[in-house]
Amino acid sequence: MTTTADSSTLAATLNSIIAEHQGLEGPLLPILHATQKALGYIPSEAVPVIAQQLQLTKAEVHGVISFYHFFRSHPAGNNTIQICRAESCQSMGSRELEANIKQRLKTDYHQTTADGEITLEPVYCLGNCACSPAIRVNDDIHGRVTMDKFEHILDELLTVAVELK
Ligand code: FES
Image (cartoon, rainbow, N blue to C red; front, side, top):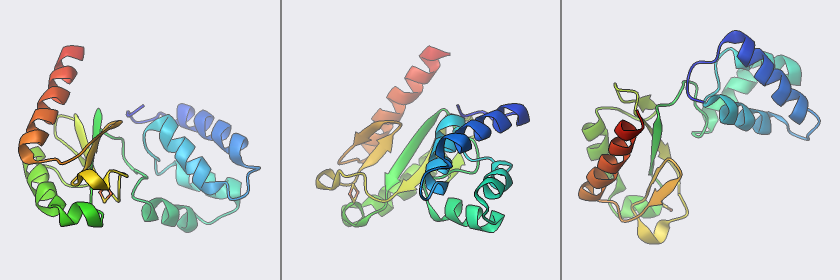
């Protein structure tokens, strides 16, 4: 789900997730993962609820959300593209690739293109170092990515999006 959650859906979802994970040792991360999986992001309204239930401060919960790049505070677009910024990919040109992709999409990390199609995110190793530089497009990992290859991937992605509409 990538749309904004209404307050009753949010409350029901959070109550269910917290009840399911509260007994775990260190329940905060599993609760945050489950929340993002269910809602597509972690709404700001979820922070005080989770904090209260786990007897943490809002700052503690917020600190964990902002520490991990994986967590989003805003709804994502219809597709998510992650660009690897870890060492192997950097040594194979990922910095230049990310600059070109940002320019091509007219968006920055943690932002979504104006048409709502693509959210761009950094990631730190996709386990595909032998084929650096690597990106992930939704669930698919692509290696040895050049701008030509990226254009092809983007073309396929947006063609599928148009066909599904
Ligand atoms: S460093 Fe990029 S996939 Fe491992």
